[in-house]
Amino acid sequence: MHADQIFIYVNDRRTSLADFLAMDKSKVVSVDASGCTALTSVDLPAAKTVYARGCTALTSVDLPAAEYVDARGCTALTSVDLPAAEYVDASGCTALTSVIDVGKNARGYDMFAIKLLGEWRVIAGCRNFNLADAHKHWGEGPRKHGAILVQVEEIAAEIEKREAAEKAVEAA
Image (tube, rainbow, N blue to C red; front, side, top):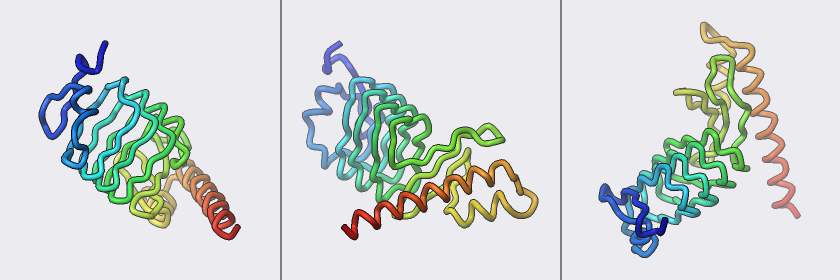
């Protein structure tokens, strides 16, 4: 199938992949390319909303203004930098190095951490906490859950390890 026979939605209009690749990306505010296995990269400086669920060939995204990103199942995606993101779903992105994936938690939700707005966020199901709030949520009171707290500790240890490595690189 050719790029002119594959369709996605750009700014709420059905558009061929060929036309999308040729258009001025600075005018793109929203993209729904869910399931588009031919898309390999997304560089959209003004996009606020990006649906790329199941784009299995997607290897990179450059979305400095994106507030909402659904990248579930983008198995080739290796890194994300989403400084403005308020919501990101990167579950099933098995090649991501900027995500700490600890698998399913005891309640059956994918549990991972991702850095958003310069802060690590712990995400499981509908829960989205900074590290301190994750400790509090699963470690105290009626929602106390030892098995999930162990995963939070695993995430905390990995964050500490990555931040130490970053500081060592900066110092060199």
